[in-house]
Length: 389
Image 1: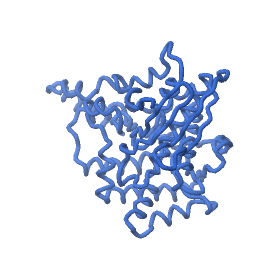
Image 2 (image 1 turned 30 degrees about the vertical axis):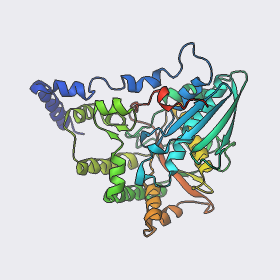
Image 3 (image 1 turned 135 degrees about the vertical axis):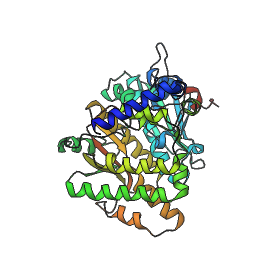
Image 4 (image 1 turned 135 degrees about the horizontal axis):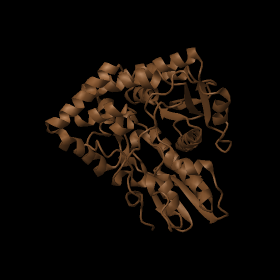
């Protein structure tokens, strides 16, 4: 952005404040980014003096999830934790077969497993333990053990999805990408496919932009996605979930101005998303990746994929790397299957996967961030607990 434009925007912000917009600025949380009850779980995830499995759930709820829907529920006893997918929190036509939902639950499960080792438990998970209840994602048996420190555990409150620009001239070393792909021998069915050469990056980047345009043109997908955007501080605190302006990776001054201005139309919001996808997410990615599994419709493999994503993202956080899911192509492929449409994105996606025995679960980008990611709101612990039977 030019200096002149920066000065004009700064002047506009000052003028608005002088013109009586202080109330709106306060009301929209302009001066309180990352503070308040909706953000307390990030700071209170290790309550002083608290013992037992609840500490594991506090770590679990800081996992990644699609549109920050936090689609999980937990039932806790002294010797076990059961995890359910909260299917009421799905994103409709964006995720018609709940692929992303189960990946999100897998992210929470990975945090839980990492925290278990740190807090002195051997945790043995059984995935999809009840054939009669597909929402019952996992039963984890807990037994006492010596605590085991882990850098991944310490990274849990520092891991955030970074939707901002990445350094466009700094590549991620190939040995780092290789280490990430090989860091989960306990999840052998999950593979990481990297696209870090110029030609491969352009190919997948163009496909992501095209899929974004297709989602915008699909009014149901667009509406279902927009439903999870929290435009006001009141909505943010009431729901304690969803996507916020603070999590968009905007420059601080632009983020402040965006909060102070009235809400934009859906058309302008969609245009801004497309521009961000093209100019920020795709253009500045150091590399793209795809998590792939033998059967992307299998709930267990989706959970394994979520565990892999969370583990990779925590590890990347310890090394100053940023990551962001870019699910648009898979979302369009799912939509084609749902509506019986021509398999445009289904075919294009299959052409990216090698070996062809694998299926795409989740595309993403990686790179070195230009600025830190903002915090996302989180539901309080009590909101995700199911009373023990």
